[in-house]
Length: 196
Image 1 (cartoon, rainbow, N blue to C red):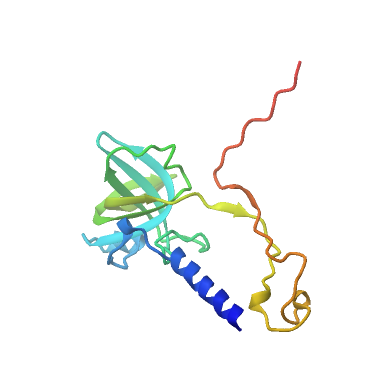
Image 2: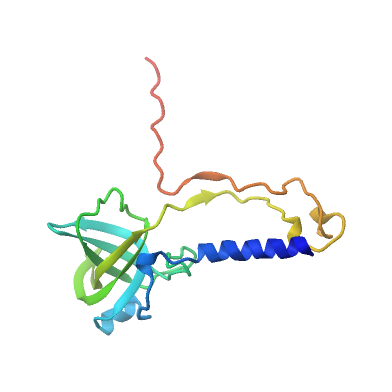
């Protein structure tokens, strides 16, 4: 019983740590989505995020085209949801390198709505809500994992033979860590050239 309590407390603390919102992204924001903001323009503060589509540095500012995603408890864009909440443009003073802020990276912005911009997605005329960003947060790349045959004996009931589903026990994969294949968006060196 004591081991179950310790495991539960450890799990709760890990979940709490994972749900911490970075300081620049904290605050109270409107629940408006980019799709809503196109039809209901306002100047309210928002916290939106998603995946970078394009980065465009200008003379004194950088603008990001972002496909919006729902944010999780840590204000990071989720990857599990199909579809999106629309696209938006976020601009922030200064230079942001498009190589670092690459297409597909997770980003969360905080700022005020500042009207709309018109552009094209392919041949389609698209209206983007514009955010004058006060904070830009680029998230670390997400590693890709293989399916790990992990078995945790502390999450089952007491008894012998936990590996077979009858309670605590030791299986051949107990405590096996997940295997990282590669980081998403990682670069690989070119294959060696054959000798002449």
